[in-house]
Amino acid sequence: MNSKLVFGLGLLALVFALPTALAQGCADEASCTALGNGNAALGIGIGAGLAVGLAGLGTGIAQSQIGAAAVGATAEDAGFLGRSLIYVAIPETIVIFGLLISFQLVGAL
Figure 1: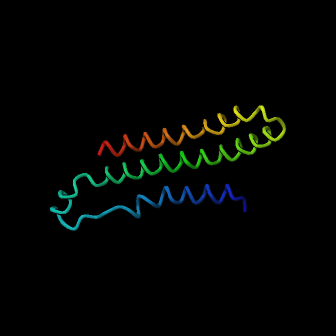
Figure 2 (figure 1 turned 135 degrees about the vertical axis):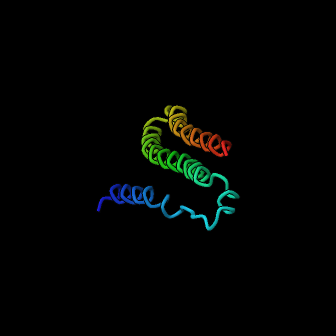
Figure 3 (figure 1 turned 30 degrees about the vertical axis):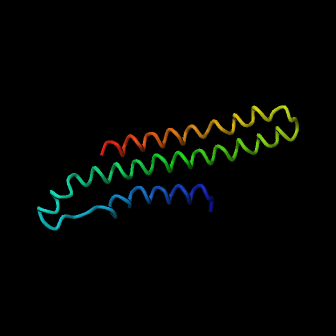
């Protein structure tokens, strides 16, 4: 079976099953009010984790393609080394943006 299909189906199952599995029921009124708005905190935590995780996943996929091309170009002509390092570093900004978004989400708690 195609690995991308398996990964996509696993991610889809995780997205649909995770909120149900992590949902917390309240035993009584006091425990619900002591928790505050627990569902919002759960959503923010999941959103922060997804922001960093999916940004890192996308960056890893991009860097695998860019890194292979950069090594090939540098092997043919050493003059491409500087440009290749810049091209490899550009996808890292996506992870930094994901990390900043997660900091903003956690700061909203």
